[in-house]
Length: 384
Image (cartoon, rainbow, N blue to C red):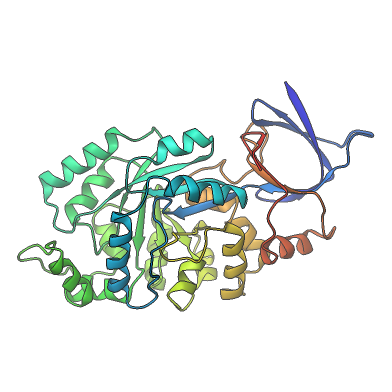
């Protein structure tokens, strides 16, 4: 059964079109047609649902927010996660969908994300989190086999970070051929740990009983460390990249890896914004993520777009809009997420009124106003 949607201004994840009529069938965009005569008043603006390329849905807001030194923050996050209630991920997902997000790259610490996404009918990928800086070959292989057994066919793994995952665990995860999501080059302390084997992250690992006896630093940058372990490929999403140099970016581009920036986390820790424009110029597909309530005031992709425009003005609203839609899908390894293409899922957000007719003005409004959509469509169904 078909339904029709008249639209004045359509952004399909790559380009602007309009006025047009969208023909929907079976939760998909069957075709884009010229506007018909008469009919209901058209929607002002329709764009793809936001792609939240990096989120921890199951992380709650800590009782006492920590903005300071990173290892202190990690301790607070571990404490809040241990006491989190069962409804945290459900509530966080609902809030993000209300704000227009319809596709997610979730770091799944509990194994519950795939069922959650399916229950709500939203698109996305569950990356099962892996931890263990001291994991040996046998332990790593068993952990990865157990994680993969519970994944959906398109889901992946998240060996957390070079400062929390052993070489054996990275190798075992990479050997599956599954999509990977990795926090990498986020911290100066991480760079120090890999280069010299000391610093506050080593202190934390020793405190947790996770520092392997006889471990020696490899002297590589975080990006080159991952490459040496076979963990960089077109199916790898590298998150944060705060301390990635030009050589690292060239290597990521050569391997076809994607990247993700989390503006709310930059603001939370008062970090200097990374040169995201250089990431794009290097050829990386770059997405945007909300990260988690442990390092963000709230989960809102619209707020992330506005923050990124403020923190990285060289990007411009047009590039930011594409990072939050079609390019964000590419960063997750998908050619359809964040797109409104004929034959694809109709995951979209719509506003009744268009504040302008010029696409550049519409891009500025979409990125800077943080306006909530009047309606959100998930697989063709209006859910908001």
